Length: 192
Image (tube, rainbow, N blue to C red; front, side, top):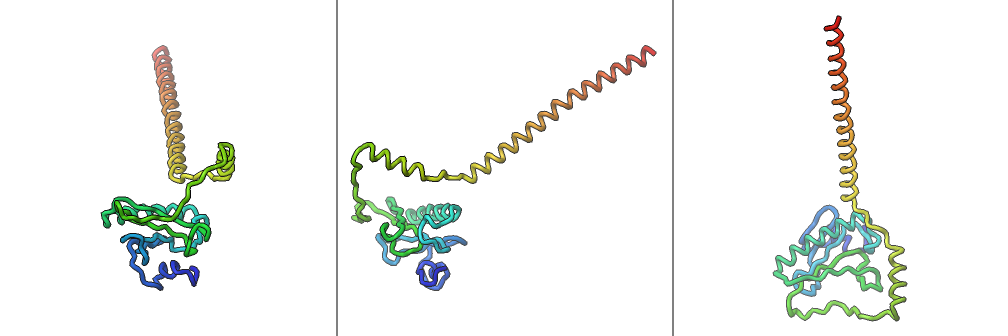
């Protein structure tokens, strides 16, 4: 917890708030200066200045909480849609240096204009491809722990099935040998 961080103080219950969701890792509360009624902030309880500072597991949990909070807001406010906003660093218009998401319910013809994201152009196709290649080279692959776990279980099950199949194949052979031996022994007894 950062002593001077308002979101850390809210998470520690040192500052009262209108919480709408809370678990061990996340707290969500109404924004005191809402863009629309129901505008809420979803905040990790641990202090991370930006999304990039947050461990992946924490970010996944935070995003799940954001989804649940957004569903609740849209339903409760009878909203026609919502905006999800997340700003990082001063240049990205982050006002409070504690990572958080804004969930802003939207209504048809509400007149709300969020930010001023300009639309520009690349000089040419080559510049666009160069930028894409530079970024692509540095983006780390997403590790899907559930998928890895599922694949590991499947490999384990396949291995178990293979072992069982081997045992099944061995059993009939050994039984056949025993029956053949038994037949030969009877035959020898009869002849003797």
